[in-house]
Length: 178
Image 1 (tube, helix red, strand yellow):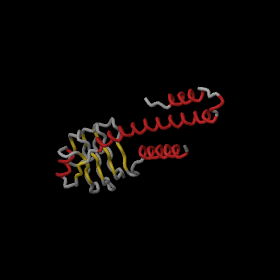
Image 2 (image 1 turned 90 degrees about the vertical axis):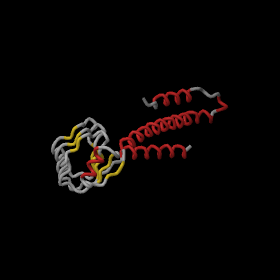
Image 3 (image 1 turned 30 degrees about the vertical axis):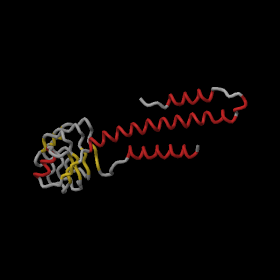
Image 4 (image 1 turned 120 degrees about the vertical axis):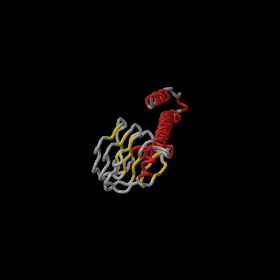
């Protein structure tokens, strides 16, 4: 029983680490952002920039003078990247989808390009996270059910009541995810 509880706790901790882990010097732009205006993030000290999947254009000098920049993730939906969008920035690697505007822009500016569709991976990770959370809820409900029945098992000869089972079912109902 203690091993089962420990496994559940370790699973919960690892899920929390997966959910909240992020690079220290990076920023993700809001998902509602579609157009990055002229000089919008000029001079920012970020090393990694992840544009949202909703992004459609990157304006002039939007990410200029970023001396620490190392990686930029540009989604396939971006249709316009200003020629000087990253002017005076440190050399960086462009991540995106082959054949996209980001790919063409990186080639024309002599920057390394990595075919890396992180938005697809993020959707898959979110799907897996929902599955893990459901499994964690089932494991927790099973542990509560077992714990609720344990006192009942000790008193097997004394006329067991249905009360522990009812308690376990109540807990299980409270643990359901939408």
